[in-house]
Image (cartoon, rainbow, N blue to C red):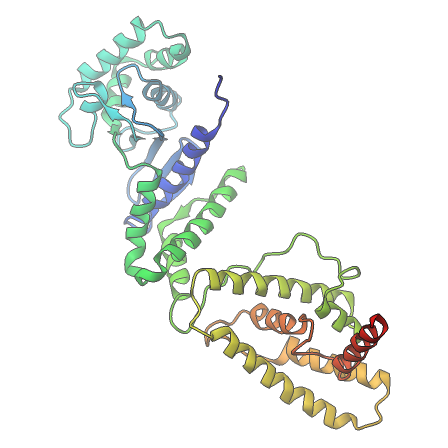
Length: 397
């Protein structure tokens, strides 16, 4: 049966992106990286020309021979760049990063870093392979290499480094974790890795979408790593849903309790939409904190008690100003005042450095969304809700 799976290609792209992140976590921090321009990965090292990296990932063990397609397809790219003047040799390096293993005595094996290669002999051997091979699929690669002058072939070979037996996609992840290790305690290392890589994949997408991609520097990666690590200090928690949305927000049709509460005090649609977003973000954030075991035992319960206590104090002060004979319009206005206090003035944090407002606002909406709400805005909302529920219960009995 024919195999039409794209998993090899998919893993290859993920490997390229993950390998690029690993390179930026290495010194020097001022190095710049861009993907899919002259090569899979282009590194601009300070004080030198561009380093071009081709990455090749294999799911199963593979050999790199003198006629391997990955070797010759790479040579085709580099030969074209040299002929067109897109790269300068020296000082640029041309690096083939592959999980395959170069056979001992092969051309690739002699081009490993630190080897004592006879450049003229290697260039001649490659030219001979290009002349004699009958592999139709590689004819364009052979032609590209042989279109160079003999001097250019030697020049090209002088810049090549073969990194065979390179770490695979899982091993590269472990290398990244090693760079993360000094920045965060062991228990949070995996959570930091996931967030750093998530941010990095976002940067990769931006580069691939741009006509003229902006390089990412090592400084940016280290700054992001430090910022993420800071969110795992004892007085902080990670913020992951700042720009998240549920996909569809319908303030008119939403029938959840916390939305009904806002309608009861005549809050406008825009503020209801914002409340729906705050609810969604806080719910998802709290769920992730719980899954990752970032919360100390009973921390959410203690936080909710604090929210309720502060709400009760402010709501009571508003109620005192109403008196016993407030009209419906006055009750609605009082409810809007209480909601405005929560929405715009209150600053009650689950931890001191968790400053993102959606955590508190959304947590209040979670309290307001229960079948028997523990927070409400309209002073008589729960009283009236109880009456409706009692009436329904009596009618059914």
